[in-house]
Amino acid sequence: MPLNPSPSTSQTRTTGLLLTGGGARAAYQVGVLHAIADMRKATGDLALPNPFPIITGTSAGAINAAALACGADDFDTTVRKIVEVWHNFHADQVYRSDFLGVVRTGATWFSLLSLGWLLAKWRRVKPRSLLDNSPVQGLLARIVPLERLPALIRDGHLKALAVTASSYSSGEHITFFEGEPQLPTWQRSQRRAVRDRITHAHLLASSAIPFIFPSVAIEIEGHTEYFGDGSMRQSAPVAAAIHLGAERILVIGAGRMTEPPSSPEQHAAHHPPSLAQIAGHALSNIFLDALAVDVERARRINQTLTLIPPDARGSSALRPLEMLVIAPSQRLDDMAARHIGALPTAVRTLLGAIGVSSHAADAKGAALASYLLFESDYTRELMALGYQDAQTQSTEVHAFFGWTQNTTI
Image (cartoon, rainbow, N blue to C red; front, side, top):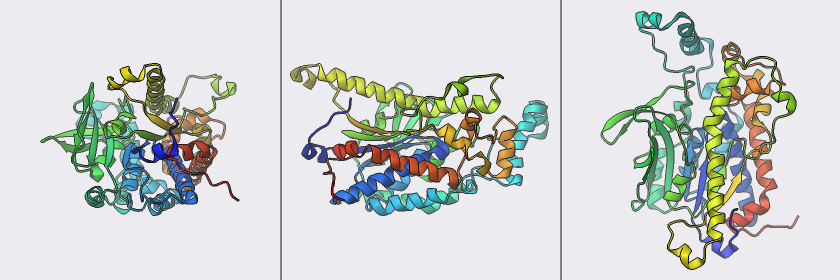
């Protein structure tokens, strides 16, 4: 279980933040950050402009992480800016959602699946993804001024920013990080760290949902590799923050960990699953399962360490890790099912062809849509849930940061 140090000890420990992946589901973590900013302001503990000197992110969480890191000298203002972006989101800020754009990618992809790759070879048509996410580059240019990072690190506002991506070329899971010069790299089985200057290409690669968005070419150690979503093959999501020196970590999830189970009616199946249902299940496995396993592993290690005598514990490389996890208390698939109708018509038509239904009760078909619903009706509801869940855990949040909870009305 997470440790509960005294406030004086807690305030001196290096804090890391982990923002996980999940496409549009990342709006939830923005709501949590908004609540934390409000709690921090209410306590008056504003001595440090940034409560998270180590920030790590994966997939859409990498974009939020980078935006937060680029404003590390003014946490509250930066959070408000990120909240504003997600509060007014539309799909066309992330991917081409007009009929022409969808036809050029998704419709062509489906046509080739039905007509065969012989036609693709003859016509030299090789679609790279279901959707064209080129519009997101404009969004990144507006909200993620990465040119600020070196000065923020030099001036002590930030120790490190790390984003993860999965190499289609080598099969390795790479954590790219930019931070203080003394920070070491690390290597484990099938995953390693690379010190690099973080660019928008790294963020695009980390958030390139497999099949949905195209891979991204990145120069790494003198050669080019193609990368996709960092949630793929990510066996230890928490590890990057630990390697970078975090002694306590706030983990903001995007589903499953505290969600209530689905109802028996949703388990009932009268027909084989649609392609959309299978795709949603696969994406949930990629984005959600590794985090739950890693958090359980860290808690088991904490529990084991309490059983070891202090003298023997000192000779071990293992150390207790204080961790606070905030994850959705409601099923995000169910929430997405209520908002499928908000998807752009062309995208809704495309997804309908593989089984995504706008029927409010069809949560299984909505799982895939939950990652693509970059529409304000959905993102605002996710943000509200994140804010509410963080407030529900306000006692744990205050203890984690060592803040004195203000009980006056």
